[in-house]
Image (tube, rainbow, N blue to C red; front, side, top):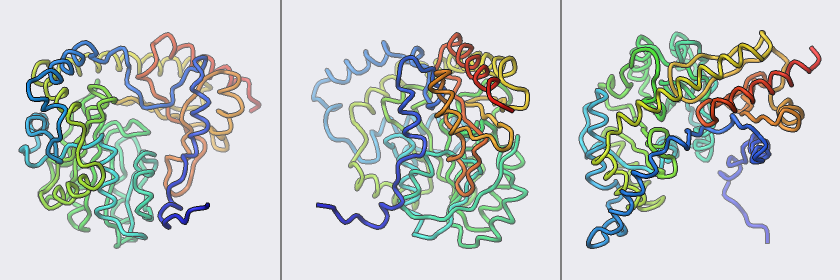
Amino acid sequence: MIPRFARRMAEVRPSAIGELLALGADTSIISFGGGYPDATLFPAKELEACFREVIRAPGGQAMQYAPSNGLPQLRQQIAGLMQADGVACAAEDVLVLQGSQQGLDFAARMLVDPGDVIVTEDPTFLGALIAFQPSQPRYAVVPVDAEGMRTDLLAGVLAAHPQARMLYTVPDFQNPTGVTLSLARRHELIRLANAHDLVVIEDTPYRQIRFAGESLPTLKSLDTEGRVIHLGSFSKVLVPGLRLGWAVAAPALLARMGLLKVAADTQTSTLNMAAASLYLDRHDLGAHVAGLRRAYAAKKEVMLDAIRRHLPQEITATDPEGGLFTWLRFPEGFDATAFMREVALPRAHVAYVPGATFFPLTPRPNHARLNFSAQPEAKIREGIRALGEALQSQPR
């Protein structure tokens, strides 16, 4: 039997990089591919104690169903984190998600009909494009530079696409480029969103991992009309395996996302929410994140130093003030996907994410994203040196 799929399934396709990254599962491969935090920095002992306690608590509440919008105490704790970051927020403004990726799916399903336009950075987070595709959108793109989305070009893009419904941005240490949206551009983005009646999806999984420069206000804190949906996550600052994220939004938006939450999975894991809440109650998340910042800052410097030493001079790399990634730009005509398949993996035993599929409209194959958080410093040096040797061996 060959089932008849819904038309939207034509937009749900395997990632173009899936097969390449699967090859990197070999333990002999040094992978800079995933957005993985450093597993050696996970607070495993503390979380183990939290899980033991909530499982053994009288009444078995942590193993029972919970409110679909999340445990009240965890929502209150998240609201406290948002308040500390300058956002007016109460527990009722928070929806707990199965990772912030779920919020991307809900936002598109809530706002976008087939053929509607989503405005994104160019390049943008590949996972967001995967989440948006079942809603069958069209895309309008805005280039990025060292200060993030080019808001000087955004007005023209919006004028050319008056049917745009939603704008998606990663303003802090953007995935994949690592750049940060400047303060002036944050204000201009909000002004344009107000003028063009756009809902803004502010995706902030890396926001807390700043190791240089001054923290800038969230778009949500600048939002005067209730049009910003702020997505946050514990994946990068606690552990990704908990699959805990959240949305903060105006009541009309959050209520409809809550309805989609009930339809999708009823609720996020009670056990995981309870353990995370107890961890936040017993331990200093800020101190833990400060340790991550120090470690990732050192790893970034190791990677950039190795890139300067070993990669051809015509290859450039971004120098992010936080987050997990640097973005390589190769000379025009270079195909990072083909090079990884034919040279980097089989000969240098190094994996990265080719950059072409981060571009929603026009793939640009002369880019790649490298993660500096997951590997030990020695492996970073070894992998970049091997990658450089492989690149130097290619005909010019």
